[in-house]
Length: 221
Image (cartoon, rainbow, N blue to C red; front, side):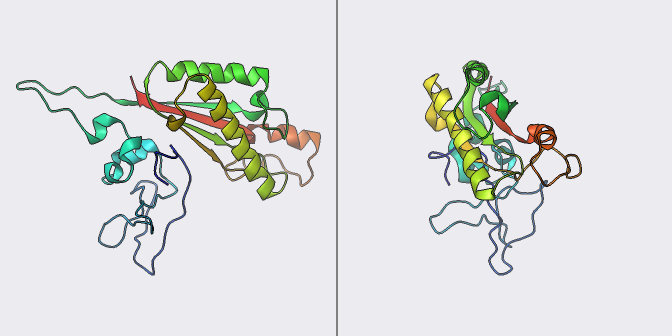
């Protein structure tokens, strides 16, 4: 999906395999799927396929970043200013500020309606966004492992959408905010840290770090 309609930043897209045409890629490699010729693989609608390692910061370093996601990247990356005679052209360095907010601080348990305390947290995010030349805000919702995958995916998506709606109400450009829900796919807790198949009070409290919203601001100062 092109960044004019979404901003993730961040939806992780599985590698597109075309019968041996796609090369193996790693986190330290390309963030777009490439074929054996080193060319970016395009979808049927002409969009670049992203790997699961794609982020705006990584795309800015990928040779195909400006071709695939020019409007997501800082203007200085894809359109560097022409240097003046006898002087080096100044470059604005991208800055990133990642804020992880416990979902319990934003919402009641298993809900997606912002609490007053949660709005105060997001007021801080909106203030930070106004202090930089904002490129994009990524809001990614997460849940713990209890409940069905379908329920948790929708819950994480609704929570991320609630964050976006509130930030827009505070003057942040809606086209600069990308939301995504990952459900229980990216837990912070380790597999053996909160044992138990039943949602007891103790286990629920142990899994609290997994119920979170990652908010990342990317722009230039």
